[in-house]
Image (cartoon, rainbow, N blue to C red; front, top):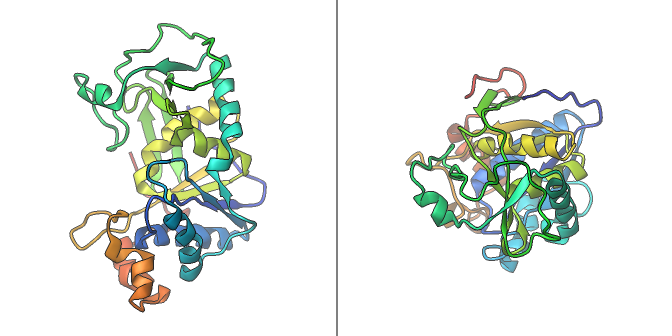
Length: 293
């Protein structure tokens, strides 16, 4: 499977923060690159708030999000959308996958998967599922809804998936070896990230996804979902991550480097960009991508 889609429609990009903490300089730089690429193509940028994680998303983080982005100089068209308002769209996609026999219920916990013998990780992401609950053949479940069960997407064994990342260069992975059957719905009746982001990007007609390099491995899974749902896939540009003085990537626990804390200290957006630019070292995205996986 090779991903090679040409987009002839107008450029449409997106910012997709999650209100699980205050946004930090790493988020800001990734979003800034997304805005730069959108402006260079005279496109339209949209804001989507990815707030499906009920346990970690908090009102104060959601309220701070738009203000922090505006302060940093980011602008978008239309009112932002929230994933928590789009359950019916995700459920429709779940039903389509179920009717095609491409997903199955799974009673394994994350701990079960982690403790399975030889369960490796692909790019420090979701561990490879050992296939404990996987049916031997394509089976259409009679479940009318996904409630109360985890649901996994059946990954085609030993299928090569390749795409050209416009920042990181050619990428390739082997389904079933580099990653396994992955969650698309959780038993608490919440769609998983992989399904939600595919449905949203397709519904918003996003032509290019600009995001951090830590999500590069997710793209292979998402490309399988685009195909399974008969949806056009966007192009991808995974940018380098901002790192701290020890070389570790920034996380939301780095409160001192949150946009909110830096702003309170009197630091300007221009000073933030100047301060962290040497750590970021962005490539010539789309012009000279470097070889990847």
